[in-house]
Image 1 (cartoon, helix red, strand yellow):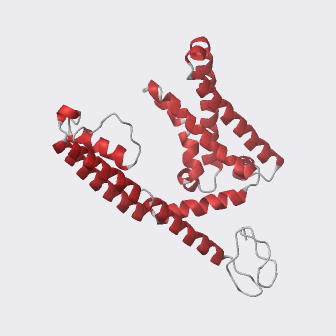
Image 2: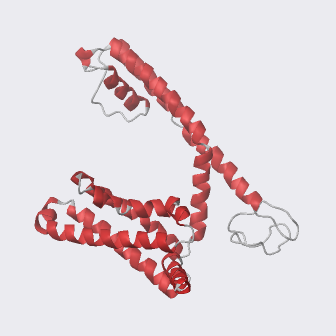
Image 3: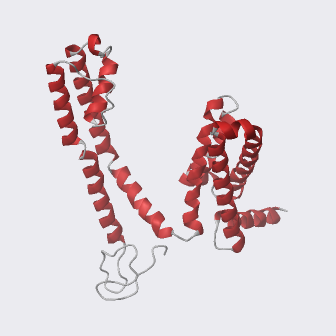
Length: 275
């Protein structure tokens, strides 16, 4: 009995996690069609005319998809060799987010549109179409973002301080008579100004206030490219690290691109990234 259960788990794992077999590829394609249909239902249900006419039908279809995705999620946990690793993985978290909003909507109806998060599951199409190089490229980008997270945190901390100072200055200079009723309102104005968004709902009226606003705009232009530079530097370093990982087995030299098949120094066949 135990052997049969183990064989069933292995077969199920090959079907719903793998794309090598025809059954596995067919399952992923079916899953992607279900995801797209579910997202289309959510979008259609947000339109008042369609909601009024087909609201009950949309609700029934949505619950059908939710039950299907819930069963699929539980089966993935059951057949996974390491359930904890799957649950905490990127795909596992996205799979969970695909079903949670429907259950939350039972208590908070306004949460229903969050079902649009299901579109994230379309990332599985990269595996189905064997576009693994794109996944590797996204991994490089995510690693660069992770490595630059501390610097970005410091940058945003400085931005909070700067916008707070500008907001307090405008609150003192302009005051409630010009629409700057509270310090939080003034800080909101400073964030909108320094980030060069400029909604225009709060505008300084005095000459001194406009001078401070101009300084805030110039400050925004001066520092708006800082996070881009930080991420670009880390991305360059990460690409270099990835190239250094690929070394030729013949001449032992590294520095090859991720899509390179032969050594650019001796012409020997490079080991695949999967090996």
